[in-house]
Every structure is written in structure tokens, then in C-alpha cells.
Image (tube, rainbow, N blue to C red; front, side, top):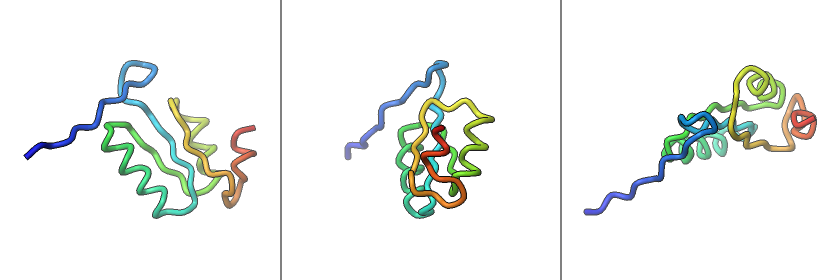
Length: 80
């Protein structure tokens, strides 16, 4: 039996890639998180624009996966 292995992603600081997923559809957000964690990425998930922005301002993420149509604070405003 062959086991598929995900390549290890490296972040800008040499460690794991840190990803923030901001998505109000909880099922989709968790599915994205599971896939990224399988690739050995460190993943945080926020379910609205306000909490996503708060996390983005506190932590140093390599990548942010952002839904534009978010409750609370629109995704466009999170980017601004």
C-alpha cells in the first residue's frame, strides 16, 4: 500500500506556513483548514470580518484566505 505524502510548506521565517482563513461558511472554512493542515500548515480560522481583521493585526500570517462577502465587516474593508 502506498501512502501519499503532502509536501511540507515553509513560511517566510523558515517554519510552517501560517495561514488565516476568514470565511463565514463554517463547513467550508473547516474543510479549507483541514486541507491546509494536511499540508502541515499552521491554520487559524475566523468566521466574520471583524474577528478576522483582529487576528490579522495581532499575528504574522504568510497567507490570508479571505471571503469578500462577510458579516460584520466586508472582506474589502478587511483588506483596506
